[in-house]
Length: 223
Image (cartoon, rainbow, N blue to C red; front, top):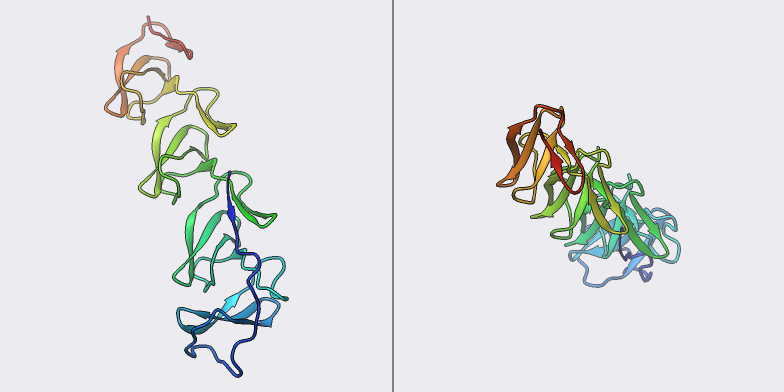
């Protein structure tokens, strides 16, 4: 889980008299149009901003829940579908990473909590080298270049899990060409017919097993 301060309360004052959307502006003054929207200075122009959080616009504009592309004044938010974290950049909310874990994205006690324990290859991510589990629990993923990429397979019976903030991956079983991250690591094939070895980041078949291959955390047995 990752937490960061959200812009829950934004100081509320009145815009200059008769200010209209598109008018030039230079201050951070805002005013409520209704409970769900306000007028604010965004990028030097008066714009309508949504106040999609639970408190709406009433003495302050709650932007803690929004959509990517919405005009914003600052801070972070949860996407309205609760599976994405947003960040205000250059006056617009943009994705700051997927919240693919079971808790999703939650606004709690003035903070944004984003459950990144699950995801898919290619999902946007925020912290380099941070790890998560694939949604099906059969692989571990790592944040590389702002996107989740395969780290290693977790096809063993315990699968992939994030336990106390640490990755637990049962990589005793694999398929040829599965991703791996420990050169020379051994595993059994899914059908038990072969022993596999990690070579240059991928499992490849090392030898055929006359008896079903068996593996545990300590060793791989292939006779």
